[in-house]
Length: 176
Image (cartoon, rainbow, N blue to C red; front, side, top):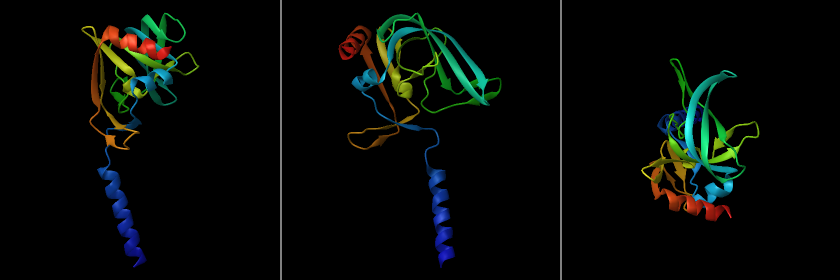
């Protein structure tokens, strides 16, 4: 009897692993006030370069951003993002919910200082807003979002869009 219970437990464990979502990272949903308070720097800028490198047998991607307008934190000309994942030749690694960047993208970024000369995007892709036709657009995908108020997890992600100047004005109010 014990052996049957053990086998049944093992089978249920295997089924649970196989049915778990494989392409989502679960993070707590961050509203704008949370993004602002959790970020050391907030910048509006342009993606100048995207480069993947091997470090300690892992691929990391470095993204250089030229700052057009600092909204919070130390004034600087550029910031360098370092995030796990990327592509080198045929080898690719990917973290669900990690923001993606292309040279020339206009963005607003909520950043955490790694204190090594690089930054992380706060809240994974929740902390990246693309600037499109004078709108700030967040396209949060690849994440399972935990709503701390309800305890519910949403796997769909979300899209937010706000007029650029009013979005920046709201950020400035929250920084004060």
